Amino acid sequence: MLTILPALINYAFVTSVTPGPNNMMLMASGANFGFRRTIPHMLGVSLGHMFMVSLVGLGLAGIFTTYPVAQTLLTVVSVVYLLFLAWKIANAAPPQEAATTSKPFTFLQAAAFQWVNPKAWYMGVTAQTVFAPPETGLVGVFTVALVFALVNLPSVSLWAGLGVQVRKLLSNRARLRAFNWTMAALLVLSMYPVVKDAF
Image: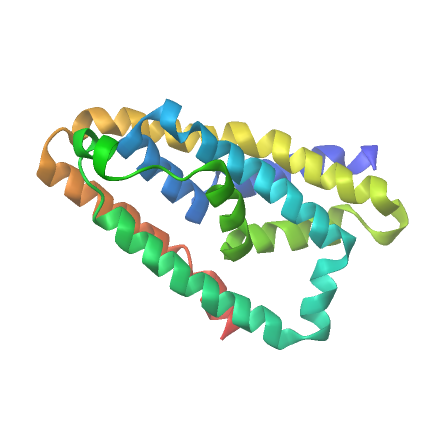
């Protein structure tokens, strides 16, 4: 297991730091609510994904192999929910108003979101398949999950921090609206590879 640890860390970093639904939402949250109010969202992403990766390693992925329709159903639900979130991001209130009219994701909301995040599923299934072969047993399963959590949190924090930096440029309502619609569009585009593979 130790021999493949560098490759696992690299895989976790690349998949965690590249654009995807979580990162687009965290950037938008950082811009609209600030870094401190986005911390529960970041923790929910990392720890929620760790929990999901653990369960995938313990055999949940086998359900999709046995019942392919379950994976298709999950994909449909995920796409519908992500479209709803994209709409909310596109229509988010300015930061001053957001403090009273809307709220960032809570820890539990962000953790639950991992279950309908197609990229999170792909990351977890691939990691457990490649880096935790059956002969590694529970040690392999939980090592993969722990590495993902440790690498994921700083990676997603970068996106929230980037959102905070962008926030300074978004004092103008028109620029904020353009930013939010761009983030919403990128969130929708992040679903394309998953939808293409599923259908």
